Length: 284
Image 1 (cartoon, rainbow, N blue to C red):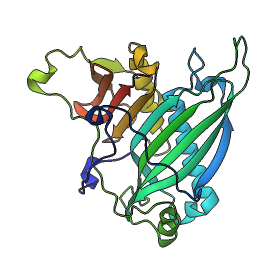
Image 2: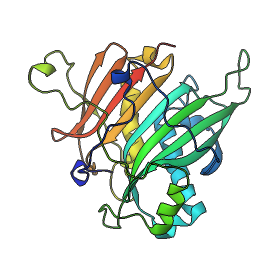
Image 3: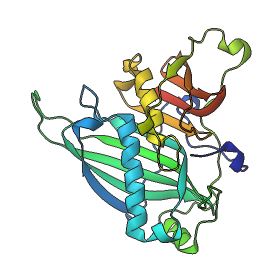
Image 4: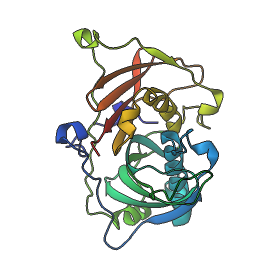
């Protein structure tokens, strides 16, 4: 998990759907194809009743790809500890079951302590039970802000070997942080918000560090989107920013609001925002 207190630098954020008026694409892959590739089979436990691969499943794919990338490059020895500060997920064409997903991972910008890691997910859909006909192949674009940390969780300089490997795919070497999501509404801005709702945390949501797993936050997003299915009918962008770790025994409340083609969520523990989310739908 990330902590806002460890990042003091700021710059212009990635394209913000609400500011730009559309869902502009994330940075393209490097021309020479530098990066890491892997594949996996979509399982029935990773999809919703409509066979769509859920957001929490996509987040787990990204975690697994990151771990495999560290093993493949050998950086599991030089730079083994990373935390995610933000993940952007652009669902351009949903991935559905049954399918094989191909993941291409590369660095799209870095500094000495953190990096933006792009992952493109493409899917080859196979004929499924009761399919009326061929399904379009899926496409999901993602970018995550990863922070290199020490064994104690303190931001640390990326090793020379790691910097050389990451730099091979990008010319952006002065990456800085700026939040994309809006702050928690206060005062009169909360007047028309629906009542906060609880989100139940399970023991299986926590990792070996006794922190809520990044993907588990997206369970709450999936719950919220049950009432906003229109946002999922076309291309949509999900931005989740993690602010503070959540430990076992915590009670989480969800505050949210809907405006036009956008849903915003703030996840609260002891009245403090631990994560914020925005889901913005396109028009087709």
